[in-house]
Length: 149
Image (spheres, rainbow, N blue to C red):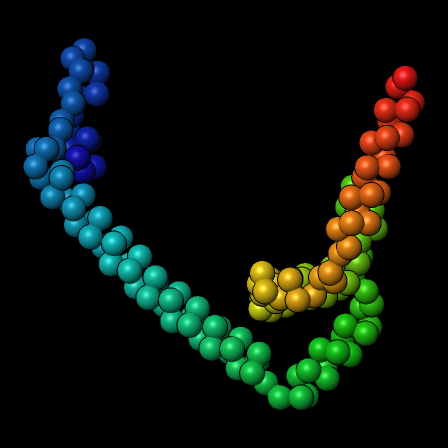
């Protein structure tokens, strides 16, 4: 309703009047509004994606950077000092922990030595004197028998 219609109406009427828009006309208007929002969001998403790619490219270039970047990073790390935190009442050095994890991963990825074959085991074991072993165990058996009597 516009202002002229409101001014021409009897404001002291006792009836309640509500004017509604046709449902299909309302939905058509809302479709236009939604399309406009969708287009705006897709443009913003495209700009954000381009910005994200640019930042990623700059980060990659920074990581590939030369010795000057590494020297600056080393200087900052030296200024900061060791990173330590308390974990369950135990003081933990983060750099040491990272180094241990790297060593463990390197050890885990290294090829493990193969288990010895049966022939290698037989070659490495010395020949045992079975008569001496039999006499030893026989002596143990006799002692038990003597102690139980």
